[in-house]
Amino acid sequence: RVASLDTVQPSAMEELETIMKKQFSNSTSSASSNFGGVTSAARIMNFVKVELESTILQGVGQLDEELALQIQDNMFSFDNLAAVDNRGIQALMRTVEPDLLMIALKGASDEVKEKFLGNMSSRARGMFVDDMEAKGPLRMTEVEDAQKKVMRAARKLSESGDLILSAGGAD
Image (cartoon, rainbow, N blue to C red):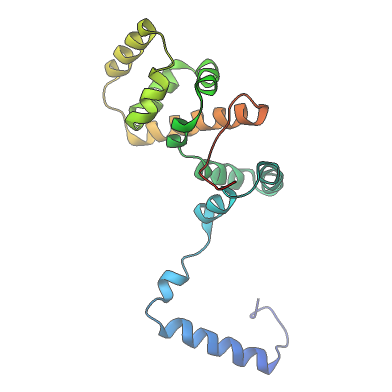
């Protein structure tokens, strides 16, 4: 902004110089300048009320759809699914392809795996676990991509009221 201004008040320039000297002379300047980015935006969004959250994300989505998706991906991690109630998990399992769910669960915590497996019949659970083990090792990028797809399906269910996602923010 300063570079694009034609004229700048001398007192403002002096204040800017003082601030910059302080900032660059401190050894903590690198830590204090590491603010911003998608992760910070997602952390802030986790504390916003649901109605405001959807309004903000719609606005960001109109300006930059990819940025809105990145923020959403960082707002809710796959581990947040452990806090979803059984009815929500069952709705998600009906929505997501079993193959995609298997890949996503390959890199999930035991708590999240158990949440999904606990919502299957014992026969379906056995078949699912056998099929998942038969897949063998997968690239982490494949697992993360599958988890993002599952989380996007979860967000759609959340928007329709079939599932309640909790990002860990205070009420």
